[in-house]
Image 1: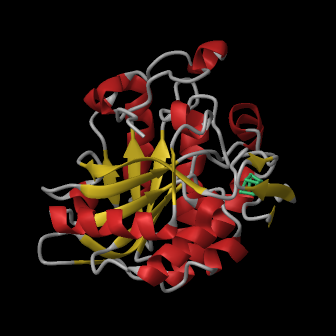
Image 2: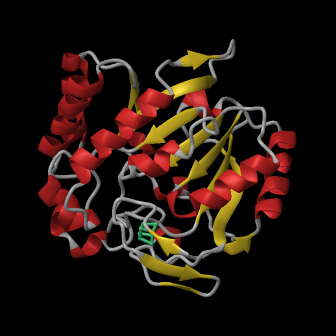
Length: 288
Ligand code: SF4
């Protein structure tokens, strides 16, 4: 295949053994972990967890990625569409409340084929770095119930330095807009599990509260209360973060409170993590 699936538009050659795009992914679907995951927002995990499918490789590759071993090093196991469909059945049988596809952009066509074989009757969540092409997102219409994009940067120079993106901010605004066109209404079941809608995540980075405040303001200006916001304070230096002095520490309570204060001032709806969440034990064990 020639790949232009994400906004990087690499025009890359991808076949069974080779991929020369930014993500370095081959054409075969590669997955790093499939298991119930308990640490998402309460409306996603509930009591039994979300069935999380972590895809190998990433179109963003942030230097500090908490999942560095799979996003940068592409570690995982190859799955056919039928194999993944079987795993989705197992997850549903285990009693999870939702199924979550994490960083699936580079395999989107195969994910859709999988869902044509078996579409679980529980909410399907598309968890993404936010940097998505609207044309590719349109392919997911009718397959996905809840979009869970990150909105990482309001400062494109920071996006360029940490995620090698020249155009992160506007591209992500456009992507979230498309997600809201597809899923404009937030709905929940009687147990508070989300059935439909968009939740935007923002991870606060150390020394970059101005970036975070910019993100919150862009969300307010562009989307108002149509989406929920999930503010995350769980940053721990990981991956190549030690090479970047500004992000080589956890965030302080003072930094988090400053961003939280802006969230309250803007009257955005959603969730805010406790700072105690900043612990590497929340990073899954990659058993492939
Ligand atoms: S999915 Fe990978 S190969 Fe395709 S355009 Fe994006 S980074 Fe390039």
